[in-house]
Amino acid sequence: MEKREMLYEGKAKRVYATDRSDQLLVSYKDDATAFNGLKKGQIAGKGAINNRMTNFLMKKLEQQGIPTHLVEEVSDTDTLVKRVTIVPLEVIVRNIAAGSLSKRLGLPEGTPMGHTVLEYCYKDDALGDPMVNEYHIAAMGWASEEEMRLIADYALRINDFLRSYLKDLGVDLIDFKLEFGRLMDGTIVLADEISPDTCRFWDSKTGEKLDKDRFRRDLGGVEDAYREMMKRLMGA
Ligand code: 5GP
Image 1 (tube, rainbow, N blue to C red):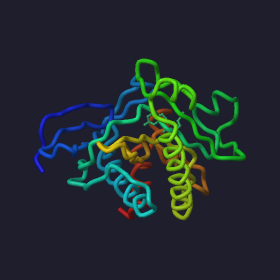
Image 2 (image 1 turned 180 degrees about the horizontal axis):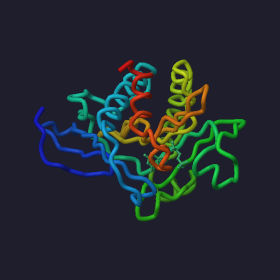
Image 3 (image 1 turned 60 degrees about the horizontal axis):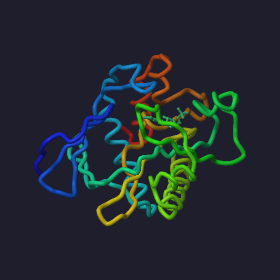
Image 4 (image 1 turned 135 degrees about the horizontal axis):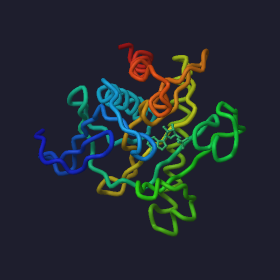
């Protein structure tokens, strides 16, 4: 595989073309941003941790019958993935109230909810990723109703698997964000990443935050939290 020109630079990753027309190289950065880019910093070792953790979890999900964009990890920070067109939605899965839901509904963080909640946000930085519902998604043609049924089914299955897998490691999965893409033939696959950047992980015993909220909220111990999650999942 040969790395070619950079196609896209995001906040946490760069994406490169390769000599294979249907595969791209994703390179994870240590750069961290929050509040739609207002807060900027670096988290040492984050690129490698997020890359390796994402691939570890995507392999587990593939074994559960969830298709993903993963092809193969090529280095600590770089992974070959299938080329997709991203469905322009952030799919948010919530088990316990936290973050923007807590703010919006006036629920203290940590409040249990009777049911898992799915939310969708339209991916648009200039608009601040506004929340939308299935009617907006259908009306704007961002995804078909059939695609949305599949996406919701995958998101809930991913949640069931991750929640119980992490529980055994002493971690509560509070909420997380997923992105899906379409392969050339239209197949919907899980894309992007699953990492402390995109999930809320709380220690089951102490409630300690083991995710990007430590960076967003200036809680300190950011690198240690990412390393701790890596250790619990992958033992190193
Ligand atoms: P909230 O809506 O409470 O800010 O976020 C809910 C969950 O989705 C959190 O686990 C958060 O990490 C993730 N999330 C939501 N939007 C984004 C985003 O734009 N970038 C990242 N990295 N994670 C997000």
